[in-house]
Image (cartoon, rainbow, N blue to C red; front, side, top):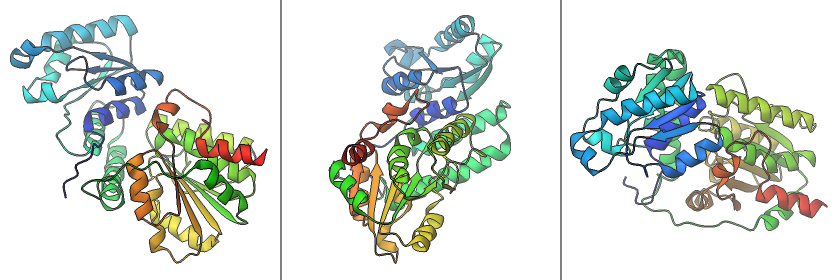
Length: 349
């Protein structure tokens, strides 16, 4: 089925995956404006992003010499251990040989070269392509690549069935007032709070879970630090430590990259606990309330206006949209205040 609304692409996904591999620098071979927002956000996370700045003549004659020059510049300026070189739509269309430029530059750093463009499929293709090249460069083991492929396939399938790829067009919807939702949660006798977040967005989506946990809710969280790419494991360890410091006991449901495969377990836990209210933050569409035999009020917290529309159709009674969640967490290593978390704190004061 075709979808007619904007969706994430493989190029930004490749860039974020290189970040998760702890790349010191990402070099884009394309026009200056390509993935500008992604580049700016990544630099908040400590990754230096460079672009060759291809121009109209380069679209015809190529610009590998610019890539060679830029790689040499990055090596001299940063003395990096790991560099990611990422293709773009332009470099792919004209068939630029990125590997040839890397070989000519002959830098001391390990280089992961990713031939990618935004017409190659869903954003997960950018992740998989990057991980395959990282394994070839000796950065990660082959076993982790296979694990990530399984997770990416599951993520794509979840989006197809319940997320942004489930409809030809999803109307943006701003969701419910966080204060209204906070009142519902605070008035519930038994609350099951579930963190099912994607990677670093957990720094924000953990906030409302933490707040209801302080007020006696049962807590489940995908905060295992035992698997995933380096940054993913580190983020899980940081957030898990914060929960424990706040006296919140939680049952681990997986890792921060396993948000798409937790649905069956979460459904079992919801039916087992049989609470009055269920709060799911991050990737709530892993669970479809309409498919569960539970008489509970379901609350979803997501980061997208279109995702909110899909969640409403899945049977969620309330949906809170934490806009710009990803931008708000980049560069952070502490819990980031959320709109719903702030509403809970204000009503509890």
